[in-house]
Length: 600
Ligand code: ACO
Ligand code: LMR
Image 1 (tube, rainbow, N blue to C red):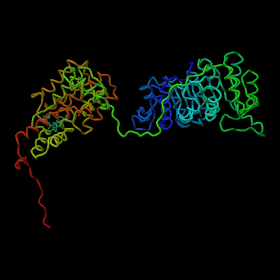
Image 2 (cartoon, rainbow, N blue to C red):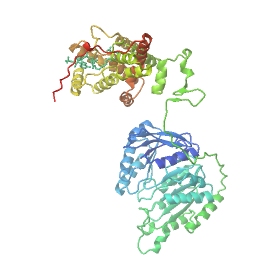
Image 3 (cartoon, rainbow, N blue to C red):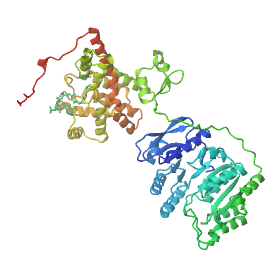
Image 4 (tube, rainbow, N blue to C red):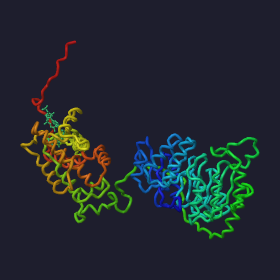
């Protein structure tokens, strides 16, 4: 790995830390990235499917997942995990991500992970070749390409510190606060940073100075390196070894902070868990001396560091870096109240899922209402056999005469003087589990039975236990003797055009059993539609989860609703045309069974 991050790097952000994510997206917008650096968020307790974030003045939706495995499956290109779990969960989140695989870099922000666990986690990552940044860090940045969360601070600070484009310094620090301070010093005294990592303040961190410096040695953008160590630990000695052995040839400027420790009588523990010397070798003084002896550029004091940077940078005669154009994040932005992902009326011509209306509307386009439904309901252009099936369904259920529940209601309402829309809606309100609205239920229960390999007998037993008739089975007038030709038509279409019909095949075995009990317990039109739609979606490559979601949100009944609206409107117009008077039900058709009031 030459570079830690590029302009295409995408991360999965573990924890819904909206402010930090927004900072990343503002950075992306500023540096004109094509894709957002956060591809997905893992938020185990959120019921949201996405979070909205600003992208300049506009907004984008970042998908939210319940766990890392789902996020990685949906966003396989995201090879960085930003683990913002607390110190209680950070270990297990990292461990799980290492098991899932596909993560090149894992950054862990939590401070205070138990040291035993931190060592285990770091070793596992190292064995797998995964770079861990942290724990206890603000992260890393590849200026002009990718920035982790809050590193570099606000957008104003980032631009002031020239962190919006690659410079030529490779910076490694322990502390995040001093990282920001140094970025600024480097911007003033040199040309900025090519890659910067704050490795974290805990005693046991994943990638150490030497790991990062060896990578920067290979990164052609890095012309020299700055190492800001601190009292405690012996990691700086590995860098000295690498310089001595010639593994690192680029100039290094280094300073270990904490030289003040010698003025205290006993060992001093600075802010970081690792910032305390356990032996003379671990003191800042000793490390600074050893680094200077190895030929590393070590200033006299921290105050002299800026001058040292300037001196080394100027000695390298690096060509000036052209300043790229950047976007400016607007000062005031307003979140949008509504989201639309199916159609857009802002251009010259409105579109259905991106297709201009004229490209689907007229006969010469070869598109029908099935195409329009596939675009507006499923945001996809379905193949011909699928759009023709949708059309066949709509045409098949358009009407079933005046006597069925919904048509009857619509007619009565129209005769009460109500408008087309009022009478239509009254008819539609009749659609439910018994009439026309058993399609979702049929898909749900037959799919459940088939998924769980229930025999027809077991399925019947299961439904009996639930206390509900099997949706999609049974008809008031249709039976084995009086078959429903609509059902035959749909089945014929499927056997001719579908690649396969596994769920229908299963449903037919259930029907064989129910009709053996009673001949009207046939697979009815609702059932056939629901079951064949599942077969259609499976053939189109939808996942079981997606199909379950379609069913749960009532998508299947919608086919009946659309189709039967045509018939209801026909009945309402029929009533208007005939100018039929108000309807009153004949009293002799009602069984009155009202108790007599007792005398008071
Ligand atoms: N599953 C299992 N048993 C059933 C089912 C069923 N879906 N439907 C009826 N039965 C049984 C009843 O338990 C009853 O048994 P029993 O005689 O041992 O007591 C017997 O069949 C008759 O029951 P009814 O309710 O009188 O049946 P009816 O023929 O009047 O009902 C109806 C027809 C309402 C469609 C019914 O079969 C049903 O509820 N089906 C499920 C819902 C459904 O699919 N509706 C869509 C119909 S198509 C359309 O509307 C476009
Ligand atoms: C319909 O399509 O409305 C029916 O199958 C219901 C019925 O009673 O005919």
